[in-house]
Figure 1 (cartoon, rainbow, N blue to C red):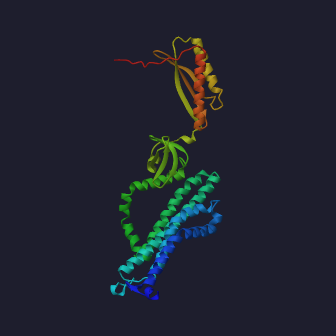
Figure 2 (cartoon, rainbow, N blue to C red; figure 1 turned 180 degrees about the horizontal axis):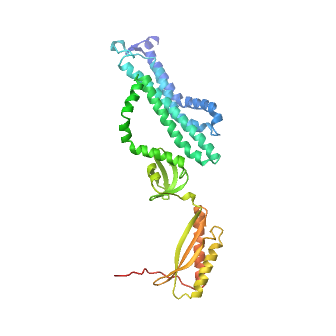
Length: 363
């Protein structure tokens, strides 16, 4: 057995190949268990800041990046059992060659995995503060948290990038930043629209024309705000489509925040037959106004029912009232009840509705 394990192939013994395969298989099999253990340890460290969120939230965020980290470390220790054949005459890892490329690839992968873990921890931090803001009813904070999360993520990614370039690839970061400064103007011009959208997002967050959950109308777009990002705002329309609107457009356009309405206006006309007597018209107008004001959901001071005009084929009565509050279900229910009330009043006097014809004139 020892003779078999001691046999050499490509500069390594069979035993070393077994160790390599065993470590890799162990890493693949145990990656989920190790990921769970590392996530539990991290959760215990930050539990007092978790605002009641369970360990599963953190595990679901850290599962993939920690598993990747485990696999990278596993391959590192597995490869430590193998070496390149001497007869290949490969350059040492300090000089450019296969060894340097493999080493830098490993270090880059390790740095990316660690960066991914940090980004997921930032996601958990944002989730924690969002949960706390919702629990305390602080809508402004729940809107600002996703924005701050993206800002911190960008900073972490930039820092990680410069760290890898300086530490792993030994580039002169000072010269690199200076070079970026020279090309900064060209980049700014190329990214003019993106910068305008970024400034628009700052305007939205600090001026607060709307918050997440508000129903807004801008140009031809109407819906509920679901997300406010760096570049754009996501809106769920009444047709359940998901519309992405650049922040610059929302800042520049006239924007109507429908969620801030204190009342909703209802205005329409009904047409009565010319066979209707003046006395019945007066009674119908008075009864409709009285009937509308009987509802607790209408503004009694703003109700107006008037004989609006005398049409070509019908007498037109204009009805105007306001439904208090901003609840859409209450609004629709009130409109339905008022319409039914008007039908009962008009038919109760034996009066018929008429179809108004549009009067046209020729020159």
